[in-house]
Image (cartoon, rainbow, N blue to C red):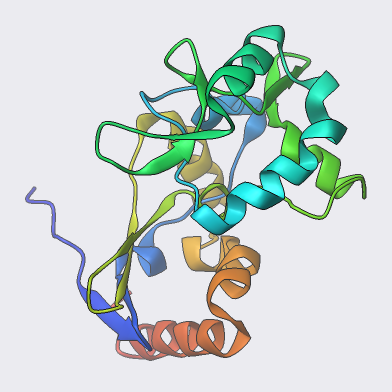
Length: 200
């Protein structure tokens, strides 16, 4: 079977790949153990204006971080430019994000835990909230959104299939946070049109 490449739809200044509508997805921490915070060869993409929020949270989360992570942050800060020139969160030993913390064998984000506990005002980089979507900015101001397919998310795809939960619905909150409520409503409108035309 030949795999069909996803089509692109433009909503405002955002180009969206069609598999955001067709991919079923729901994170399953029991299966993956939070591997997306650990696997890979660079940290999570981070915006320059997010650095301040991360640094403001450091005192609160510092004791939750490993000694190795603390040493990395002391040496190079909370972020660095990777081999592609992208700004990403600092990592430990070439893999773990410095903000990982573990509980019962599952990796969590120390930033997000502190935020959800009401201890800080910054949750985590938007790239983490949007995953498995990846965002790319183009010189003309257009933004591209595509699905990053990674085998560690096999459990999330299976769970999403069981729940019949499309990726764009699973990511409603972060997509709305990133692009706005009106934009997300337009995204849902495109999904409804594609469904009515039996294209998804």
